[in-house]
Amino acid sequence: MKRVYYYLFYKFYKMSEAAPSRWWSDWKASLALIVLKIWFIVSILIYYKIFLNPNADIIGSEISWIFLVIIISLIDYFTFHHRDQWKEIVAMFDQLPKKQNRIGSWIVLGVVLFVIANLIFSFYLYYQI
Image (cartoon, rainbow, N blue to C red; front, side, top):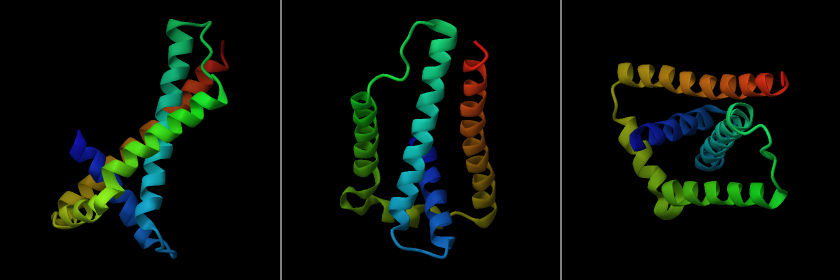
């Protein structure tokens, strides 16, 4: 699971490197992962409200969301940026064969599309009740 998470970072990093602005590609990749995680958490909370506890307050307070973003950001920081671990991760996945990288790209695309579709579907179900 950790390797999949690292590979997601690697692919977001490579996309950032391919963009016209290459500044802070490692931080842009981290931001993409943070957003993906938050979207996934939001969809889980919506499903919780719909299926398990209709009276739950999924919005919560601003403080709880700020706390959540800070926790996710700290985990991301210590996973990738503390002591520049992202460089080792990029170097490790750069050594993969092209075919394996292409397959990995499709898997990453599938994961991203799943998270986005999951979020949209959860909002759809939420507004049906």
